[in-house]
Image 1 (cartoon, rainbow over the protein chains, first blue to last red):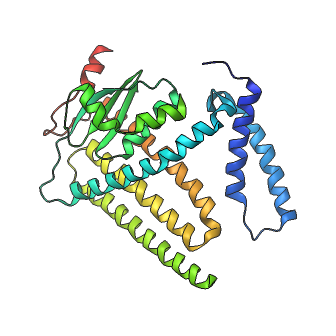
Image 2: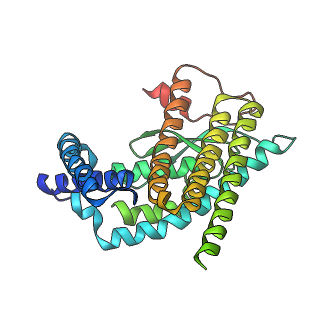
Length: 174
Length: 115
């Protein structure tokens, strides 16, 4: 991975903070001249926050916003939301069924994602999808609590648990 | 015409809020019914995340000016809720909370022994 300049990473952090600030503070009921004050305050605070945190926020700075990555990210959203809805019906079934159809266990799977942000995104996706919850990531090993263990084999379990996610996240983060 | 659109959006919003509350209720039932910490965490994380998301989107649809704000809040919930769940699950494992007796496999134990 090539080195990205600090200014670039700083600009990325600043952009992220100012966008969050504006969506949280803007309201149509505020007059434009009043909003200017809020905006200036936001710029000052974003600059401070970005200066404190840009080293941790991203390694690639504005290159995160390349059209290819954004395209794959938007393609990923429906996949993720659909998985989440399935997960909730799965939870509903296991909670409400009188027989308690559970067979829990902790399995280990491996990933070939390298980027830390990508690994985090995969862990979050796994937690929010049917029956699985990430417990720990050590290098490329994920320890996953599975509410109904279908396979104890690393590879097979990995294919079931990760499903489509890894393909998308690889495009977004690598 | 616009009034009709607003009314329809409001109805859809209330439907979203009802679905969200249903999943939140489900999460609390899951907390009582599941046998151990880890399974409880599973139901609690998933159902509360989608429940909260659904309520937020519902609010955004009822009053459209709130939509950007509620979407930002939704993003933060999706980012943080699973991390919290993993941290809690790992902490309880390290603290020695046993898995339920019906559990079939525990690969994490090997990892701890290797350390």
